[in-house]
Image (cartoon, rainbow, N blue to C red):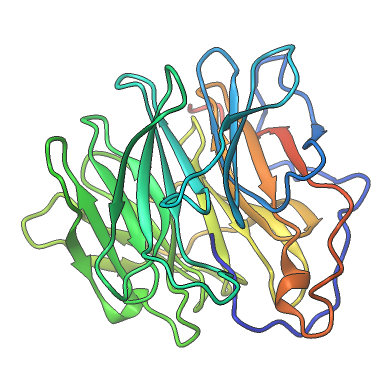
Length: 330
């Protein structure tokens, strides 16, 4: 979940076809082809997305706690219908080893209601609520990443920080906080991805900057990644099998959403930004398979942020699948 509070540009629809750049020689499973899938009627504003090893997809919605599931070869179905404490399903992350599907339920576009921002977990076996943890007053979760040991890391978007929940703990604690991860709009720290056992990448949605954080150090250090330009509202992020950082450029002001690739994100010096796709309408989240197949949710929610356009609900919502270009060094 990441959106600016205001937006001036007119809405853009997703182009019918896109051109892949060629930063590398591709080597992706043959069954990962460029395609899209339409969500069922009533499934508005997709955001959180996760994929199981057997190909099952889970999708969460921005303005509803519903979580949808699609098993291979089957139709979409409701996996979880939402609850009083789960009223949004942004940022889904699947922990298959522990049988948990983690999600973020922020009080965003609440329609006048006041509810505690929460992080929740569902039991994958039966779709029941395993836990729902309220965040401290004033804090709002944005994106989630899971450690190999089951630790849950959450970007706290209002104050600009990283929250952590280790196995066995019952409440989130602040791992790191820095003004560089905040933003005047109130939407700062957004996408988050682990680059290894000691380093994570964090996006600031409001400022357009990316950072590397040594999250496992006794005193974590935050370093800004050198980029040739600011990214317009960097949102969800993922790590390709070859180590490239995949960044979704939400593009609130321009309306030009993009899928970006940054090779070797752990390297020092200036990084290169490659455009894999453009012309998208608020891409927000993604999941990447070990073979390099990306699944991206396109929220199409910009109209909710444009005065006078709030009622112009799009007639359909889609997920997009694409093979990522991979370097030979993977």
